[in-house]
Length: 312
Image (cartoon, rainbow, N blue to C red; front, side, top):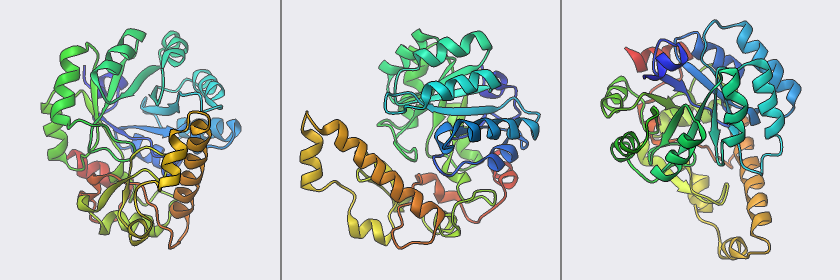
């Protein structure tokens, strides 16, 4: 079954959840343009703000493509409340990341809420299928943020061979031809993020948006300085100056069994703070997250025009 049939939307596309970038206005415009859209629950600091956002999106759309991204590992202390809110307000689907989706699936299934799970390999895809996931998000090596290890030409057929649930592709696509090629590989649909960064509705800085226009796929590099694990960023002069790997002390502390958990948490907090500062203000410390699909971003456009470019 194709993604648009699963969710009851026009096109088999999800505007992917982007930390700090995705907002309610983007969600509304994307859903009203015929695609599904997903926002990270962590983009909201309080449950009150989170609830109000879901209600605002609902009141301004008629689509069934309202999705929430939940980080399901133990580091997200807000997860249980976020899940409770999603179930109470009846979102259409949830994308789980970085952990076991067991609790999410158990609570969402009875309510008819679809659960899609980020995976990067066959082993985990089979596990989430056994737990009752409705689809897997196959994160490939061209994805923005924390990418996978396999090319879409490898991971999509692999997961289709070993799983009986739909495979949604994530990573590297920014054109209609690209979408068609992925669908021809056997994908049920696509989760697309980076092409939507340079949209008029985003509240991020003009500099961040313009960077997605000015830079291309050759300017995307992996850095471990943000979260301790490889994450894609634009190779700005600041990134070039500071480097993309942890220094010897950071690496040493990350391997210490007694303190590595805390080191990772501190690294993540500091990294996310630098990303947040760069996203919303003009600063020389430019750490802008994006994927190679910004190659196809030629100007800052409204969401509806980006969707039109991707679908016609």
